[in-house]
Structure formats: C-alpha cells, structure tokens
Amino acid sequence: MNLTTKLLNIVAEIQEDFKDDELAYLAVTSKIEHPLRDRIAFALHKRLQDDFFICREWQSIKGNRTDLAIIGKKDNKPKLLIEFKARSVPGYSSRYTEHLKGDLMKMANVADNGTSLYCVFFNTCIEKKIDPKYIVPVKYLNRINNRINEEKTINAMIDEYWIEYLKGLPKNKYKKIEIQAGYYYETPVSIIAYVYGPITKLELEGNTKG
Image 1 (cartoon, helix red, strand yellow):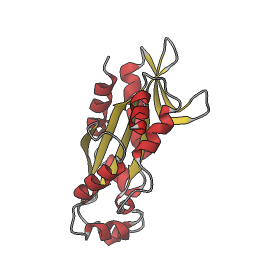
Image 2: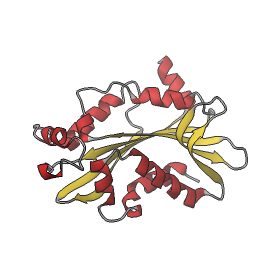
Image 3: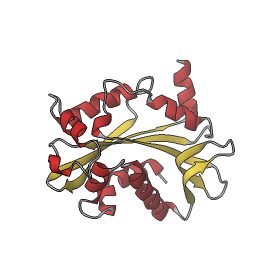
C-alpha cells in the first residue's frame, strides 16, 4: 500500500471535504493549519482504518508529540509521521527564522529507521486586495493588502521562501499542490501546499553528516 500516494491524493482533493467557500473563510479569518490537518487525518482514517491507526497529536514513548502519525495496527509502530505548518500572507519575510530540517529532525528522534517522515506546509495565497470594510473579521487586513502592493505576486513570493525553508535538505523531495479555497466575499483565495517527503531517519542523518 503506497501511503505517499494516499497522502498526496488527499491533499490535492481536500477542498471537496469543505463546503463552498469554507476554506477561503477559514484561511482569511484564522490560521488554516488545524482545520486542514483534521480533515486530512479523517480522510486517512476512512481509507486506512483496517490496517492503521491514524493518530492526531501522537505522543511517542519518549514524550515527544507529532501532529499526525500513521501507526501499524499489528505492531503499533509508526509507519508515517507528519508535521503541519501554515503561514498567512503577512507572515512572509525575507527569511524564515527556522528551517524545515529542524522539524524533520525532531520527528526522526522518535521514528524507526523505516518510518516515512513528511512536512506539509500550507500557505494562504491572496492576490487581490481585500476591501477595507472587512477589517473587523479579517485579522491583519492592512498587512495583507500592503503585501499585495509589492511587485512580486504572492505565489512567486511563496515559492522563493519555500526554497529558503528547504536549506540543508534534498530539493527533489516535495510536491507543490494548489488548493482552490473559494471566495471570501469577492476575494478569491487559494492555498499553496508543499508536501515534503518521504524522507527517512537514515537519510536525514546521512544528509547531516554530509
């Protein structure tokens, strides 16, 4: 059973699990990480429940927590671990304060050698200014609109910062997926998802030594 294919298909089709414009509303008015993580977790549960436990906020025997874990029913061992991140338009900056490698190494500390490690990074993408009359429900509305004033598109900005976030890791292990989230009033919203993985503990350790 190819768990990577299952995960990628679920992320690519996740908008179908939300009502019309629900994702756009959630992305513009709050951080989108948890709503998407929870729908992905349940979608995995529906597809894999016969052979695997799908665990949100999984706690290893070492006490560390991981956002989502696929655990084998027969041996109770982690087959796949995922950390989720989300960033909204105002959060983009010339560099990230942390890199993806650190998150993967944290998971590697509680993984078996054969466990597949992933990071799914969601980015809210708004290319059209939001009407100032929505300043009450939209957090950071002015900062969002100021970002859209810049010469680069938000989508291009997201791509550049993602490559920076990959520092110290192989660059050929991710897939970019654009999720059409619908509209917040008259503003179109999309969510750019980068699914990084699979990478194993041994690969990470080898990359660190290199």
